[in-house]
Amino acid sequence: MQKTRLKIFTWHIHGSYLFYLSQGNFDIYIPVKGQRTEGYYGRGETFPFGENVIEVPAAEVRNIEFDCILYQTNKNYLEDQYEILSESQRELPRIYLEHDPPRQHPTDTPHVVSDPNVLLVHVTHFNRLMWDNNGLRTKVIEHGVITPDIPYSGELEKGIVVINNLPSRGRLLGLDIFLEVRKHIPLDLVGMGTGELGLGEVLHPQLPEFISRYRFFFNPIRYTSHGLAVCEAMMLGIPVIGMATTEMPVVIQNGVNGFIHTNPERLIAVMKDLLKNKTQARQWGANGRNTALTHYNIERFTNEWEQTFNQVILENDRMEVER
Image (cartoon, rainbow, N blue to C red; front, side, top):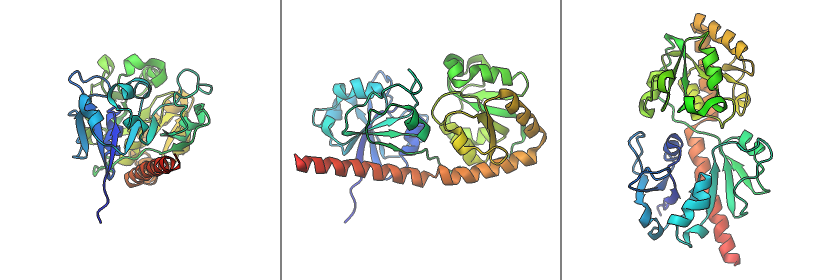
């Protein structure tokens, strides 16, 4: 007997995360509105989504049967669900996927979710550590990314930075660090909204080939979740240089698969060495790729998600029986 594919409803929030999530053996339904406001973009044209990512007009969402609801933002949880989900859909198995660490206060911010029937999933152990999770059950599902069939060349004696809207996101994402380092090291910046500081957006399907030519990948971000761009760079075999904050110390070993520090001057010195020593850059990158193949394996990632969806569905069914 063929297993029925799970039907997951969520919003289109982070395109690259949704793309990697869609590699799983389940169907993902996303709402779409004519105005294409946040969460209602539909599939868009940036990512090569498969047939298992299905657009649904927002007004029709309440007429479809789903197995699980996946929230990804406060707005999804506090507003959107009441606007487009039916009452019965709001009682379905529910997961809140938290992409970021707390912003209001790094250690004392209560999470928006306080309902014990909602599973709170964090994308890093750092995130889970920093949030006040209100005593709820939590789980960490670390990132997974596809392994591109593109070799690292490192031919360009430059570093590459991949951050969307860096000029407007300021110190949090390390704008000042980027500007200071660029006084000493040739750096290119790509991403949406880079303005005069960067080269503009490179679409996700073309990004691996584009960045594979740079000697190293630089991540100036002070405080965020663990960026998918870092995982993607490691999977390509590009050595990663970055700030020793958030989840980075768990992943990067200095002098083995990259280099991290809280002193930008130390990072600048290492970058200068890599620009002179392509062999070392290649070795660090190869080790980083081995780390990524284990740590960010796409099969592990999608299997964990499928198991998690089945887990919350089974628990919900048990509660229904007990009622």
